[in-house]
Length: 417
Image (cartoon, rainbow, N blue to C red; front, side):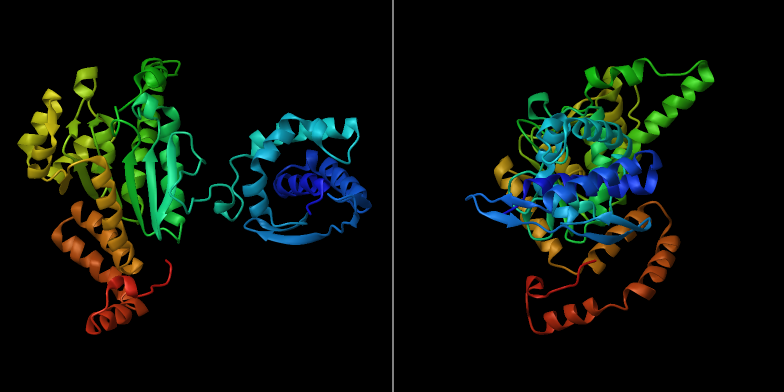
């Protein structure tokens, strides 16, 4: 049985871990409340069947990335955050539900949480997966509002653009969440390859003009210089939304169905492998709304397609490119009859990549990106420098042995990276 009072102690532990290090103003109140709740819970409390049970709470030392500090630690904080996130939110909104505290203490605790959580919400405790865990099932996890994250197969992460009612249009939240998502994927040792797709009828309608209009049409600044400076900062921030895909060491397979408009082209050109359905079409739409594409298409599309004339035509006329032309030009490598077949094909391909050595796979991606932007001589020099260390891995012997024994790569176990 889990004692109700433990809920408050756990909550105090989580926020206390942050406040104790960063905020002396709230530190004393948190400790007093914690001691009071520990005292109340140390008494006999009634079990579910009416039995009296004794609860012993203890404190433990937690060593985190900022140093060593003493915090109450009756349960593992990570699992508590995963299981009780809804309860925590309910408590902050309804402090009257807090057991073991008088009305004044409940009010004080509520004030602390309301003031402390927004202020320190950006801080990440050492295990990021406590808060943003990847789902191991086919159903989407919900750490983001514009993306659905799932783990459909071992070592494969599926990132789905998830605003189907808005045709997956890219609002302000999306531009931020993509960066957060791929930064976490880059550090996730359980992920070796990523599949990106769109929910609903189409892949994406591009920029959400209604949501983004304020930033684009009413930039802040007292004069032309300051307005220009702020606009540059804004554009640079939005460019990172797709550059983070390219920087992620895990290969990214994107699966496009229906329309891929404007910002969608910026997104897919930052991915490593592009697939689409027979009904897919692509459009560099920016000239139709009075601007030059500024978050990656004009820089990456020429290196993806290879035909400068075709790139110029698409960018200057904003005409649609359909699936057959996309395949013949090299924008996509495979075309599928429908979305279901495409997702199955993307996941199968991702599984093949995930079965290989992560040292080899991630090293290959990083060197491909480097070589694209440098001369052959520079690329060769970088490759030699890279492999002088990366060849010193057990993965080479394991892979060679599997080939000699005629084993499938999926039968070989490689350590996480």
